[in-house]
Length: 315
Ligand code: HSE
Image 1 (tube, rainbow, N blue to C red):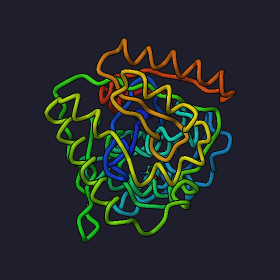
Image 2: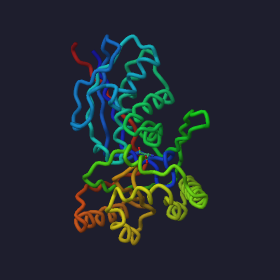
Image 3: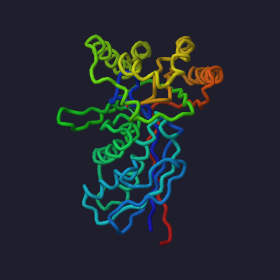
Image 4: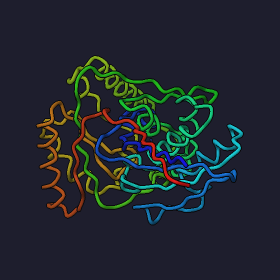
């Protein structure tokens, strides 16, 4: 009997102005899913390690839903038994549900007679992410599956396309993960349906500036445009520490900071590892000062991608 174990990395979605579009992968934090085939055309969740609050019912679980859809969509003659090991904190804004969904499809794909391409894997993983977030957006799924920095685009017919954003310079990310959970559905629920034209124009400038800055490796452009005038102002009340941390972060060499995904984690970009570690020190001080317990990580932007391990066991 063959078991395939895949892991998929944590991700930072939005990157401020790229709400539901931009994302990048983070090394050091990942979810792992082990998959084996079973004769019944179902998905059975054997165990979830590190995620006591996660549902064991397959149709409610972000790793199982993509495989249920795969069984149906690919007309498979078998099902899957899975074991999920959560390495990414739950409801942290670090793309945990996307990582579980991606790890599940990447592992299951290795057990298929006819392998699926990344576009199909993306589609099935997206359906899993939707269970957690309540919306169809691929800004965490895309970098978790492809690695790097990605733009996840949707056309007017609802078809997704993932475009890699090349960046010729190194970027480092410091993450502050406060020890409280924030459900993506809740953070999406506070957003207004309409925006002002002036905000639309400013946000478009920020997204354009950030993308051009990344693609040309222009740190000044990145610094000017890693900003968000639409989503963060509406969400930051869910992260009361945000405004307390802001003045001190503005005095650092950060190239820009903001809410990671739907929050509550905070990300900050840096030119060098040294700057990223200085920001880490500062965030640890601020965490103590404002009594917001949390962990702080440093990782290089975009290096991580899924990994696969094959295990043979006696049936
Ligand atoms: N773009 C999403 C949001 C990311 O901010 O709601 C969370 O999964």
